[in-house]
Amino acid sequence: MGVALLNRLSKWRAIDRLGLRRQTERVVFEATKTGFRTAGALSRSFTAATKLAKPSRLPVAKASGRFDLTPTEDQQMVVAVVAEFAAEVLRPAAAEADVAGTTDAKVLQQSVELGLSLIEVPEELGGIVSERSTMTGVLVAEAMAHGDMGQAVACLAPAAVSTAISLWGDEAQQATYLPAFTGESVPAAALAIVEPRPLFDPFALKTRATRQRNGHLLNGVKSLVPRGAEAEVFVIAARLEDQGPALFLIESGHPGVTIEAEPSMGLRAASLSRVLLEDVPAVQLGTLADYAECIRLSRLGWCALSLGTAKSVLDYVTPYVNERTAFGEPISHRQSVAFMVANIGIELEGMRLVTYRAGSRAEQGLPYAREVALARRLCTEKGMQIGTDGVQLLGGHGFVKEHPVERWYRDLRAVGVMEGAVLV
Image (cartoon, rainbow, N blue to C red; front, side, top):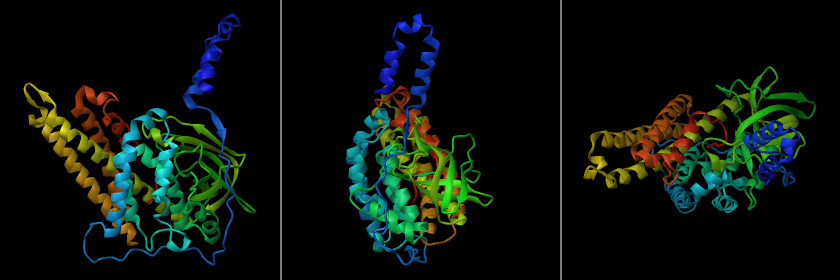
């Protein structure tokens, strides 16, 4: 509505008579470029319903003693349900969500009914698991992204916050916030780490946390935050004075929280936003060591998302090249085409293997920093290549929105620049 009014204003003839044409066009350009600013969403009242004696933590999964990445029966059941949701709900709504720049509220509500925010919450706090389930999170993210990565990020954003509080929150934080994530009305929430500058390093943050008598004050800007305009709770990454980066919990209803639209090349359905913080009261979540684990688990989540989207590309181009004919025969009969499709399948299997291995080690409480680094590198590089090859295999059809490959190409490019937003 605001953009429409500004466009009407720019066509008003009196502007030329008053000599204000250039200034008006500048206002319209700036408004449509970044969208409108809004205050943080009005939050519900988060209060501790019960008092916990100590924080609840999930035990690590038991090692089988052999190298076996086969999902358990429970994981297979969960993934089957999520895959059905991705195929029947996310995939049909993907094109419209990409154009609208947001995920439909009905889709978000259906994802809440799946219990995505409960996967890492202990049973005693209303969750559905009795041990650490990093691999379940990886498998769920992969299955969701096979439907649509942008909507998957929007649906999984609250789960990132509930997971962070389950893993690193103290007894007061768990008692205050987790009941909301285990109920029927799950709040929109987001894990915000990225900052708007080139070559962003999550361990060299410009957002600052200043220690106060009763907590901290945050000042800075966060970028590429999913569903920022509607989020009620944020987990923010900030640098603690002379100590290093850490995580902080804030509620968005504070006057110092301002949300600004941030249209992006890909992940448009995730409603990415910029969060501006000015003297916002916050409480620290976890320790400085927990922050490094948060980065690793987030990167693992993005690797899982790349698997699902890359599989979508492979599933789409395979029948296409077999059915598309040129010079009297399917184009798949050409070695250059057949080899390109084969390479997509080969690289996808490699991406999946290193991602699953990292997830399995994280679930068992074993060191997994090396495995995540390998997965991140492979999924970033090969994921973008798979998106590029998918567009190339469709030729002119790969450039138009009639086919979904161009959207998958844009989404896959996000894997190398995103930090936070999802957590497994």
